[in-house]
Length: 225
Image 1 (tube, rainbow, N blue to C red):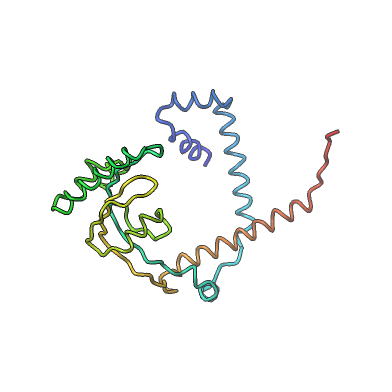
Image 2: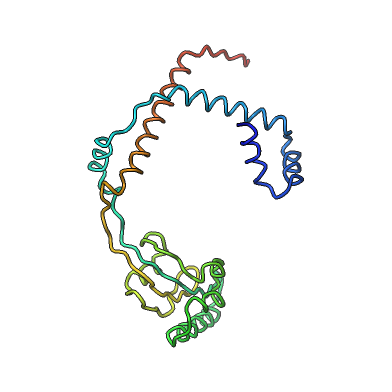
């Protein structure tokens, strides 16, 4: 177990030399790291042994939680959209903003004229992620985007392409590629995850109880002046 944890830690570094360099910088040694891992694993194993008989959530518990917390099982309306961003610096003057707007309008004309949105996004968008996702933002709810972007996207139909939309980041050309209406999840669809959540909550409660009992029994002496 110690070896597995140690190798997982070491694998975060590109080379053994980089790992050793970080140890030196932080004043650590391999022996000290392994000792810390051993101590941590002992604690974790002991705690798990203490709560191995913790009660498990039942279907009735899941149904009760589902009934009492309806808002947690509502999926809001979502839109899937792609965008091309022409960024505008925060300190841009009026003339610079105008030039950026013209550039965005020119791209919008090209897209509406039939050029592939994803191709233009990869080539022209100034969103850093555009090279990887070709402008695709996947599904999002209203709260996940800045207000100006959400207001425009959620007012559009699937397949629509917007005129440039101004936000704090610059000008966006938006293409809505899909929509999902708001819905309420069913108990059956969420039951596995809900039971896992309730079981973890019960286990955490048992862990807190064990720690509280340890503290109450502990004979703590303070030797500070």
